[in-house]
Image 1 (spheres, rainbow, N blue to C red):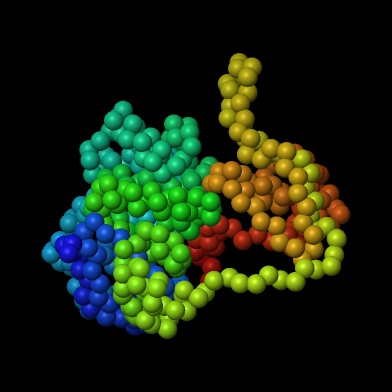
Image 2: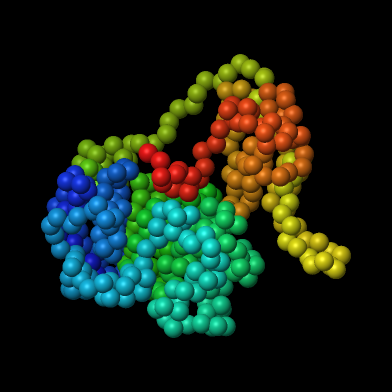
Length: 374
């Protein structure tokens, strides 16, 4: 039986008198992975934030106890919590765009963690940063050191967050929906990486997710949350074979099924031919050889009315760039026709009427929604 690294007892958290976590109790054993699963708004992230005392100002810890290696964290001194955060306990947040500083490079952001907790700087810090970026699967890590968050894809930003969290080899890693911003082709690869690191470092892992299939591949134990309460706790194998609570069975049965009937139409709503988006990497005033990053290179596709076209690929493969180019949010070369009308020759003012018919749901809602508007 493993010693418990974290012990939570009778935890209740309220926001403006509305209780979102209700008398919750759970243990996170040393060296094991505990998954906290449930629908959005069930209280998973609030529980995780409570461990590090990172609740918003409106949040109130009504009752309960949270102990780390036997030491009470609730009411602990601010200096104690600052030493704990990022060092013994680290967290991968759900929205990397709002967690990374838009004015700092990748190197500086990871380097600050190493300097603060390890006193590491200079060449040693840079070598460690490159090692971490390679570890989380970022290609050409040396070239990414000077990149800013907006220059990375959503998946790459999330990987930088993972690298920052792992920088100090924490005893407990809290992963709040760590694969939300990643494509399906790399989700399991990232989770496998977390599992390998957990085993190698004998690290505890609190995995927060709504995807039970992903949980099944990594967790030893599972807690199912609903409306602020844990309705079932079990080892992973038992939960998947014989769930006891009706809500657990509902989550396991919530798999997409069936296909829509095909529509009898050949009308093409969108036609893209030989689309190209190249980003200049510079080369100096007197350098004859100008280098380019070919984000999208000679892509052609079409979509018929009522049909769905799926585009998949690794982070940084050009999927989001392609979508933005089609909407004329990025400069591109090639042909773009919407309902038979050429869009590639239109200026921004001429594009406005067409954007009423061409909408986009961006990857990061926190980075897209105005915090000043209701």
